[in-house]
Each structure stands twice: as structure tokens, then as C-alpha cells.
Image 1 (spheres, rainbow, N blue to C red):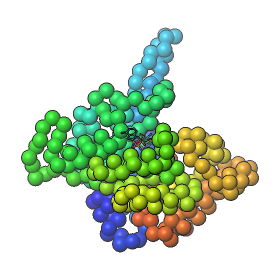
Image 2 (tube, rainbow, N blue to C red):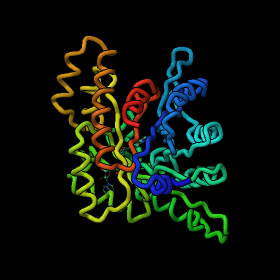
Image 3 (spheres, rainbow, N blue to C red):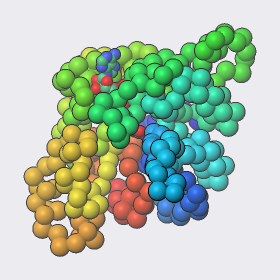
Length: 317
Ligand code: FAD
């Protein structure tokens, strides 16, 4: 079932959902299930599974380093399918422009359709580690908007190289990313919002936001989006701070601000166990306020560990 249909069906009740990361290649999928199991009591109608870009690895061959390209966390669509089968919940595989040709994306979409996956998240992806700026993959899309168009076209029977008349088209519900504190490359929040509107006009059905720690940023973002005619659901993404290093890392990687009260509370902690608790309490307060304001879904970034998400969900749902 589509994410947007879950939202409609909930009739104003805020839903719980979360995002997981595929295990590192070669690890057991049971680790993933062990982190999903404790969250199932909160009845997520859908679970997102991220995709990571290809990266270079250096293999030592008799003293010489051989440069190879690999994907460290493969298996997004397979994991989605196995979660749907095991837990009977919908899943949302993340699709990236970076690292994929349009043909490869088409294969993935056809697989999703056959596997009964109704939702996809269309993302550009970040620059590769060794690149300063995002470089489009040869034969791939340069921006998420192009990916949204490809997915929407396929839903209408327009494949890359042919139009196929059929009564069995995929009809994907498409999520896209939104940035309450603007995307790091955007020259201004307003211009980033215009880009978001282009993704919506191309066929996106809902937005999931980048993490934020001050709800005011989310509320202002939603108002600004509504003002320029974006009228699809805007789902807030919540990440609980988990380690002291997040104070530097999150602003550096995502160009987001952290509220001074949160920084002070984390600074006072003697160890990461205490930081994790501060992160839980902050996210509970954020979640309660957002729920009170009637957000359609609270979507949590689990980063592979669910104990903190469970502690938050217990207080909020
Ligand atoms: P776009 O919408 O393409 O925007 C990228 C930048 O280009 C923005 O600054 C935008 O303003 C600008 N722009 C857009 N169109 C144009 C144009 N025509 N001309 C000039 N500028 C333009 N990354 C992963 O690698 N894997 C994941 O699974 C993943 N999941 C995510 C989930 C969520 C909810 C979010 C918020 C982010 C996720 N990301 C993920 C990160 C995302 O890939 C990066 O933030 C990426 O840098 C931008 O992706 P986008 O889809 O927002 O790009």
C-alpha cells in the first residue's frame, strides 16, 4: 500500500515509521531483524531502507594497492522484499541518481514492481567520498527531479526506450527529500524550495525532511512550502543524538544548527550513555510537539540501532 494511502487511512492520527541501513556486505541480516523486532509493537505502516553509493577500496596485492570500486552495503531492494514478507509491512527502498545509470534504475523499478513494493524514495545522493561536488554518473540523472520523472513515466508505461501498453503498470508512490535548513549546496532556502516544488510538479507524492533539532525550523519550512503551492504531506525526519561527536559531525555533514540548550545538555554528559539519554529526551519533546501539531508521520533515523527509537516511541505512541 502507498505511504500516502496509509496517511489517508490514519485520518489525522500521527503514524510511526523509521529508516534502516542495510548491513555491511557479508554480515547477517538477522542483525537487522534484531533491531526491527523491538519496533514492531508501534505498528509502523512502512519502513525505509537506505541505499549507499559505490566507493573505492584499495586491495593490497603483494605490496601494491589495487583500486577497486564496490558497494559496501548492497541489497536494499532484497531487504525491502524480505521485510515485507517477514513483517507484512510496506517498505520504501531509497533510489539514488549517483552510481546508477537510467537503465539500472529501470531494472530496479521493474524488480520493485514484481516484488510488490509500492513506494520508492527518489534521491540524488551525495558526492563520492573523494569528490568535492556531486558528479552525475554517466548515463544517470543529475538531480532527483529527473529520477522522479523516470519513475512517474514508468508508472505510465513509458519505459526508457519504448512505450509498453499494458494494464499491469507499476504505480509507485514517490517520496522526495526536503531540507528545513536548506540543502548544503543550495544558494538559499527559497531557491531550494523552488527545486523541491519542481520535484513535486514532476510527480512526487510526499516529502521526508532532513533531520532538524528545532521544531520551529520544520514549522517555518512547511509554511514556506505551502506558500509556494507544495500541498503534499511533509513528513518530519527525527534523529536522536547518540554520541558526543554528533555535536560537530551533524552540523558539518548536514549543515544544520543545533539549539544551544541541546548543546549544553550534551556538554554536561560524562559519557556517551548519558548523551544517548539526552538525545532520547530531546527527541521525545520534539516528537510530542510535532504530534500535537498534527504531523502525518514521525519518521525516525535509526542508524541501525533501535533501543533509543523504542524508548522514544514508548513515550510518544
Ligand atoms: P536534489 O533534489 O537533486 O537537490 C540537490 C541539490 O541540487 C539541492 O541543493 C537543490 O537545491 C539543487 N538543485 C536541484 N535541481 C537543480 C537544478 N535543476 N539546477 C541547479 N540546482 C538544482 N543519501 C544517500 O546516499 N542514500 C540514502 O538512502 C539517502 N536517504 C535520504 C533520505 C532523506 C529523507 C534525506 C533528506 C536525505 C537522504 N539522503 C540519502 C541524502 C541525499 O542524497 C543528499 O542530501 C543529496 O545531497 C541531495 O539529494 P536530493 O534528492 O535532495 O537532491
